[in-house]
Image (cartoon, rainbow, N blue to C red):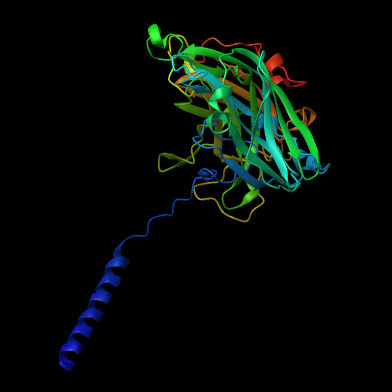
Length: 419
């Protein structure tokens, strides 16, 4: 037994040594750094930046709670101990019911809304929405709410099937009024935080349009006012935070946001491109972070771009506002904006065709001019920029809607759209 045990032990030692030698013979592969972009945020998780927002047609209402960046205009506003709505976070859509007053041959709608409120929300506070359709009494529905301190914000989605019963649905189309309110029955208060107006339209579903299906209309809120308005802002690096923030540019498209290819230019030359052994690394990319679409499939012949509006966020991993960290760079240093102040232009190819141009200016210290957002009490710190829509991929849209309908009846003062 002893001889057998010694033999087995010797065999084990020999095996381990052979594995170590074999492992040492494999070359060490170069470590590929992570692309410096925000990590995906599965729902529900905290959004970390003013520019982030989610699809407005979730299966269930969601809430998000996160500390806001220090020294922002939104944070400064909260010091007055009055809650404020981030206007660019408000997304209102129409939820279509397959019934109207018990009649399944006619469809109807109720509002579904998502928004973010900058604290404080005191103990006992309850957010709710009240809307009024002409010819009908006002309808109220509560939104998920939690106590929120002055340096934090709360995001909620409410209404739709989970908030407004089908008995209160309507077939009305046209403009209607709504308000976001905050009541506190402990304190005996009821305040209006935001008032707005939206325009509802309808289009037939993708079913046949005769007989029992003749009144199967799908409802939607018109968002053409978004198209001329864009934003530029920074988001933190995964490892170094705001010590070397990355550039983001946001704009809207009418239709599906796919096959979008962004390019950034400075003094006539493209920047933010790093190649390693013939391959571009940290390539800039675009994705939709808000999709205002219908709840049912529609007749695309009657609803160009499927009655859908998508907000697109383009992130430039190799373009940073500044770098005050001590960390190195994997495949080469990025383009630093504080070292290269002045005018920039982002051009976007959509389906391989030039579709967008966004020009903006960076200050000598790498910061952006957010004074227009502050003056209009946007509720978030971002540079607001006019977007040039090029080509016809967005279809026919209302080019003057931004003048009166922007931010649901709160058009920007000091902003001018491009022709």
